[in-house]
Image (cartoon, rainbow, N blue to C red):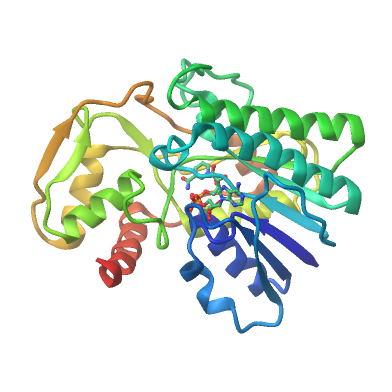
Length: 310
Ligand SMILES: NC(=O)c1ccc[n+]([C@@H]2O[C@H](COP(=O)([O-])OP(=O)(O)OC[C@H]3O[C@@H](n4cnc5c(N)ncnc54)[C@H](O)[C@@H]3O)[C@@H](O)[C@H]2O)c1
C-alpha cells in the first residue's frame, strides 16, 4: 500500500505516519509546515518507505497512491483564525484537490472532520445524525463551516463519482507532539504547570470536554479507513465519551505533578461551546472502537513529552 497523509507534520498526522509505517505502508507525507514541524517526523527521514513533500494542498498535486488521509488544516483557534480565508481555502480547495486526486488514481480517501461541525450543540451527546448549531459568520466559522463544506464535497464526490470516501468527526484529542502555545487546553495547562505559571481557565471552569488520547484516535482513524461494512461512507464520531470539566483537568494534572496548581480566570471566547460529547455508538458498533487510555495515563505520557521541551 502506498499511502498519502496530508498534514503529516502535525500532531495527529505524525502519529498516523508512525502507525502506517508500523503496519507496513509506504508513506508519502505532505505538509506546508504552517502549524506542523519537521521535528515531528525527524525520526522517519532515514527510512526508505517514507517520503516528505513540502506542499500546500490548496494547489493540486499528482501522486500515485492507494489511500489518502486528508488531515491538512490548522486545528486550534489561534492558528485557524490567523488567516481565516486561508483556513476556508484549505478545507474547501484543499479537499477538492485531494478528491480530484482520489478520482484520478482511484484511491480511497478519508477526511479529518471535527466535532466543531456540531457547533454549540442543542443535542447532547451528539450523534452523527444531528445537523448541528453553527454560526456561519462567527470567528470560528472559517473552521466549522470549512469542515462542513469538506464533508459536503466528500459526500457529493461519492454520490456523483462513486469515490470511496470515509469521514471521521474527531473530538478533542491530546498527546505528545501537540504544538506549544496553540491555545489547546491540555497542552496549555501542561506547559503553564511545568513553567510554574498559573493555569488559564476561560470562564468558571465548569465547561466540559472529552479528552481522547492520540493513540486511541489513530486506532479509530485507521479502523474507519479499513472499514468496509454498512454505512462506510457516512460520517462517524470518534472521541472519548467521558466528560471532564476544565477544573477536573487541573486536578488531574495536579495529581500527576504532585502539587496544588494555581489558576487564573479569563472570559469565555465567543461561540465557545459549553459542552461537547460524542455519541460513540457508530464507532463502537461498526468499528469495534472504544477509547482505552485513561485520562491520567494519557496526561502522564503527555507531561513526559513536554518536560523535554519546556
Ligand atoms: N487534534 C484535535 O483535537 C482535532 C479535533 C478535531 C479535528 N481535528 C482535525 O485533525 C486534523 C489534524 O489536526 P492536528 O491536531 O494534528 O493539527 P495540527 O495543526 O497539528 O496539524 C495540521 C497540519 O496540517 C498542516 N497544514 C495546514 N494547512 C495546510 C495546507 N493548506 N496544506 C498542507 N498542509 C497544511 C499543518 O502545517 C499541520 O502540520 C485537522 O484536519 C484537524 O481539523 C483535530
